[in-house]
Amino acid sequence: MEAAQLQTFVGFETQAIRALGRGMKLDRQEVVGTVVALQRWMTLDHTARLQAQYETIKYLVGELNHLPGVKAVATRERMGIPTRVHVTLSQERVGLTAQAVQDALRNSDPSVWVGLEGETIVIAVETLLEGEAQIILEKMKRILAS
Image 1 (cartoon, one colour):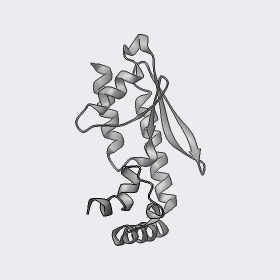
Image 2 (cartoon, rainbow, N blue to C red):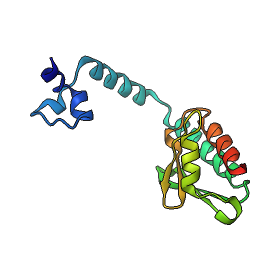
Image 3 (tube, rainbow, N blue to C red):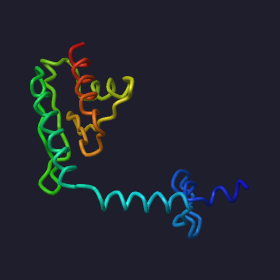
Image 4 (cartoon, one colour):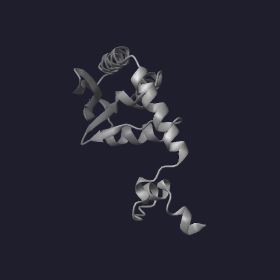
């Protein structure tokens, strides 16, 4: 049983097991999940999806730029719509590094994961669900105020 279990798609992905041909094997749940995901994607209103993403970016950039020592810009466009918000901090005014803010966000409850490029915090807006931008903003306000 243990040897057979190692041949599953999950074992290939999570345990770096490279059994011949097994990495491409799918079970019925994965097939159904793929079909449902494709059906959903093909019926989505992508104009509305991209507009909502753009509004979220405008909201985050606008609100973050009101915080002392914080500069936020929209970056990395896809199809004319920005997908990321890059946040830089003035250490003199804020007193925290980007790494310290990232750590505080990650250790908060609920945990918030943002990227880090050098001293720039990166928020991938395209991955956010409804309401999560507000959570990130409120947590950042609390962290920067402390």
